[in-house]
Length: 445
Image (cartoon, rainbow, N blue to C red):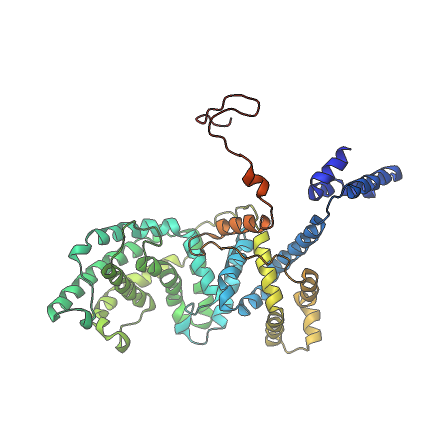
């Protein structure tokens, strides 16, 4: 009777703990178990969760295939349309980093990005899954470091907004004297930002140093002279400069920024980014050419900072086991695989042909993922959960918080909440069901 009630109440948990009884060596016990199952079925219990169990097993297989084969990951990223970059980025980061494999994922993607870049000036500057992932990772792991480094100088700038004008565009100013004054102010303010950044190397998170070291080491193999500008593309283009342009979005200030202040912050970011790129202003932005002497004077301190943060941290932090929230990521990957399987398969075959000229049959034999993926995709079938829901902002959430929310929303997407909405789950004072007085000031101990 207890077993019948357990199975009736929760078929998933019930079978998990009792299914092995159906294979018991004692024939009478096996017969009794089958009898119980018959009773449960006769009572009208729905076994829809059995398909969910099978689906989760396929999802486990999908994750195992993913983390064991970086060629598969790279094919996913290469086949990713622009509309799916955010979702794929969060799904991959969640799956890999929660297992302590985040650096392995990033290193493989950085190597592929460098190999796929034909011009060193474009290193880590293209819009791709790799650069998006670096941006998300930097915001996630560097939030405290960013606040420690920039919040003070941002607040000082905002407080002095009435006394500053940083505009250098002649079409936006009234006289040569104003332009000269603005250029002096822009130099002073940019130097304050630059000093706070370049003096912060001791505070750089170990995870940042690891990523910068991977970038420098990888780029050195193909573009030796561009290794530190590539590091600058990560730490400045993907991390510091977006925060300088929009400090309110990063929580660095609570003030409402004027149009003029945002313009000034944009000019500061332009100067710092050119410094990181080791590029002088030219005809494209001729009104900024007057700041080239500033760039020349400060290139040494900027390069020294990039060299310092590219050194590996003294001691690597031990990997921390995190709670896994894979379901939402797997649902997203399942849909992505189903929609783009032909292109993903083509990318995998192309990878192998590039490595060695072999026939498609030889490639499948020598690459396990090409042999097993078609069967896995076939077993997954079309996505069962075609659910529209308002996704939280990618930029405002870390992968763990995004994945927890995604997991919760998808697991409860088809849940009937009528009984919950009609019941009183919270009482404000009054009496309980057993007529005991309820004091809302008391905690539920």
